Length: 437
Image 1: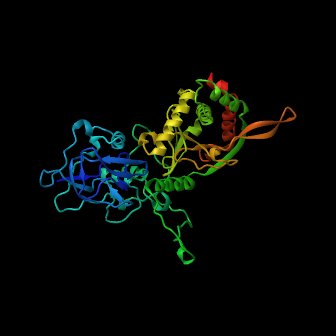
Image 2: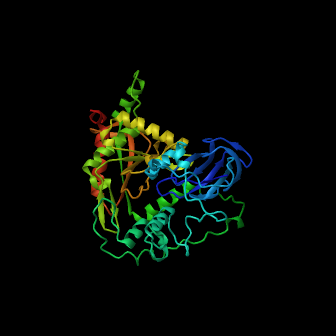
Image 3: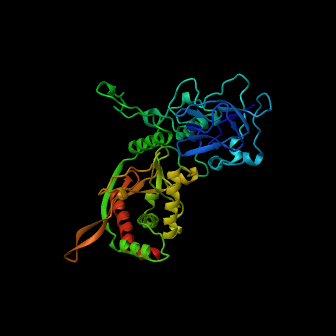
């Protein structure tokens, strides 16, 4: 018998929701055949079978959360009593969690080789087991276990007293790896709760009519957590303006009609303009560490863009945009957006962003006030390009106008700098040839 445990899915992700079983009890399965689809906070992955044989048992109904290290399937491989799964070779042990996640997404064999089988008759311990239920993400629980920290003795500084990774750092006196930052100058342990803030129970809406209840899926649950944190932690301010993109519109139309023309897009030029402006406004390419009271300036410009998928909003990241041409950025947007929508995007493509861009204009609307993709400090929202009458040199003319809204974290920068940043972006969009040159 082969007992297969859910493997580590990378980046501190220690649980996933069962989306689909590709087999049923009694089915014959070959090694590397699709076994189960699992959705995590980041993406959906298909895990292949680690062995050939007959399915004896399955653990986890569709919609149920399963934890890494727990046995999810038993396969009769003709080898008798259950034995520990083969230990991964040293080269596999050296893989980073991100590489392992990518391997799972591609159905690689290494991702299915797990160790530490529980003794016979024992139930695998849940990842979040603790003497007292505390509010902490699975990734934080894993760090606590690795550092030998009792979460019951840690005071959380997150919303509602939730324990964050930074709280564990303070508990152990650790500093950020490879970065020297000042120690916290204030004691945050006693002031984590927000006065008068309490999440009340909802009423029973079925008293007034029929209702339908749907559980939050993994990615939607992650979005809810992240946006709630962003709105509570970062003081949002929005700066709005309109940019004349008549010249850019004409240029894109001419390129599209030209035989062999480059597949350029509005989004690519906006992303390029943002990356260029961030070099002159580094405070918008930063993050604020509230515990150490320090601003972390990033010396790279990795721009994320919002991608609408049937599983929720994802933000793929294009790296080193300031070093890419507009055509390369256009191709990157298309490729990453396609992967996000078909579920094949890898975890590494969703991490490391320094600033985000979102475009609601493709669906209509005169504008929007986007939520900051925390811990970034700025996000630029695009409305729909529309022809409007405007005054130029004392005359009314028709021009193509693009609404822009910059949401920014007022702790890190002020309205004047935000306006200058938007003006910089607008100046580039009004003269697209300069960007290309």
